[in-house]
Length: 362
Image: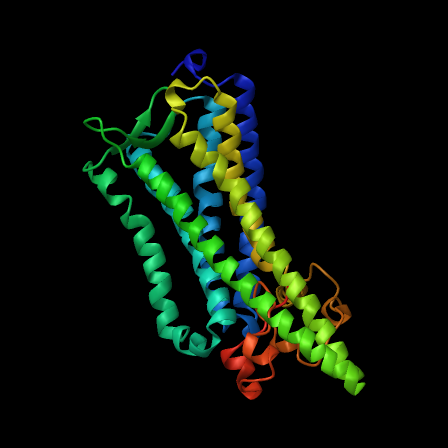
């Protein structure tokens, strides 16, 4: 295809190709390091949340190592040069990995809500066999949704000559692409909003209880309990900040792509840069996910340090220099710290906290 017939300016295609190359390198390194660090940390890999973080990182790793390099090639060449067979397989892997990433985020969100809002059933829902079932459903459903266009039942997989992209095309005037974009954005968005709203309400309820408890502590002149209450307030604030970060990043990454593909027809667009920038922002999700869900957690950072020490990149004393907050810090394991409400109220079985109610550290 002659580059002059492209709907994209040359500067836009170069920009997209450079971004794809950059995200390939950063995404592969970041996700691979995260996977290796978590797998090699016995204290972390046994927790339910870690399984979903690993699913997220694996899907992002596949996206960065397979889809983005091929995307870079087509943008630099301004045409598809890799054959018809790969052109039919490419959108399945591309959209499938994006779907796995989104559903893994949803699973992490639901996991956090159940931990905080329904902690009495957390241990039953997140046994090993149920975690495996949930992960299998995430991957199976993500690729099952792409089966109709792959078989030519509702649209078809092929090359769009105008945008030189291998994507879901219309067949007999019908395509599943727009419904998939709407479902893929709206469903995770609604789940994230509902879950984090419930978490935030639960946290506010606990803060009101803690104020009453703090007043009692002050009247009793119990300084140790007062310090503990203050520490829990800080944990609640970090949890709120983490929730906002996750949701804002989700919107920034995927809302432009959804709007660009649903509202504006890419083949007839008057705003080609809009589609390029929207795509680049969606690619960025595969790079920032390890940072949000893993690197922000202290125990995960320690796992990174230990991994680097094993391969002799860093001095052996790196991990030992990490500050220790409390004697219970070894129990922390997950992408967001929060003490279950029953424990904040002084109820529940504290002896079983590590097994059934793991705390999380931002």
